[in-house]
Length: 192
Image (cartoon, rainbow, N blue to C red; front, top):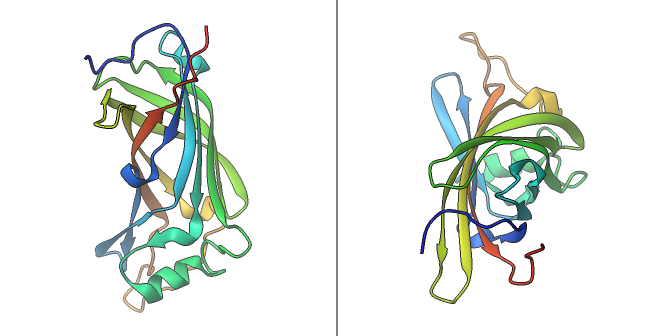
């Protein structure tokens, strides 16, 4: 079996949350990097290798599943100072355009779409890579992609900060987001 995505039909793939990682990193006190992730991710990929421009991505993240390894910090990130998960329980990304191809492992392409955080939607573009395709031990077909983007958190209403006595700020404004997505082919998804 090849790792290539082949064929001339569009297919639907469900994101596997147990094999998908949505991570982020941000500078803290301007001297160290704090890393975290979200475990509650779901969504669909509509893939058409013969016409990548007609493909699409729709991802939803449960904002309350943020995890940095420090409970007090996680609770602060869930609060109104940051994600405000009580009022805005989901982070959402919906693609509007895909540029490039993803037929062979290693192919790189760009995904442009609408990212909504804390109820604010902005257009962003992710740099993505096709990692491969293969069958799993349970008879399903799987596909993998990675993607990265750097956003300014203030663009999404995440403006809380504290000035440091030594100069600078407690939390950097630039946030690096990285994704490693694995999705499962839906057997009835192929269309002519």
